[in-house]
Length: 248
Image (cartoon, rainbow, N blue to C red; front, side):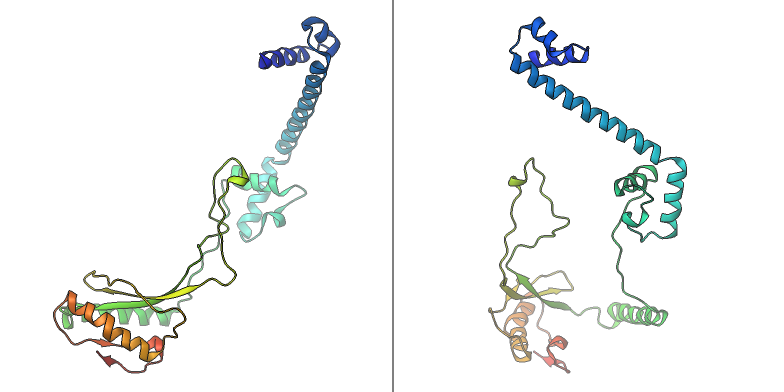
């Protein structure tokens, strides 16, 4: 019923009727009529502003304007929207780039610098490694290990991790501590695809050469013997300041 009343009053206002005429015709309370009259005037004002802004944007984004923006972007794609503004807002530039030109703003990609000498060295080493794997040591079981620190705080990307909801109060909170605890974990995988259960080092333990070799002998070696035939194991813990191989 309330929706029908509001629709009837808005229709009358749209037809040019004054609040006094609407009161006399519908016999609605005076306060209700004038509240809707204020709402109607506010709507007309906002609608007129929107249409005016739409026309102004259309006048700004002419073919010549779009062509000039395209020329500047093609000359230097590193410019920000703020530096591309030509007497207009950043939103106009963004709409021109995204809608008129069909361009998008992407993050820069980072890669390692490889000189021609480095490329050639890698090609030679890769060919030698493939030849060794195919012929000289094809029957050997290889294992690869690595250590990594895991933080016990929840990981979150402030820019890309989003939460879709209706109200900001519904967004889940990612809690973290001032000094997050971390744990060092050793992982090993064999060339046949076998994966050793992760080994967790004790909290606060400083892993030096002796501790690393002890873990290799008492943790990694038994696992290697379980997944394959008894063989001679050799490890090169280069990350722990050992300059020679160690037989296990």
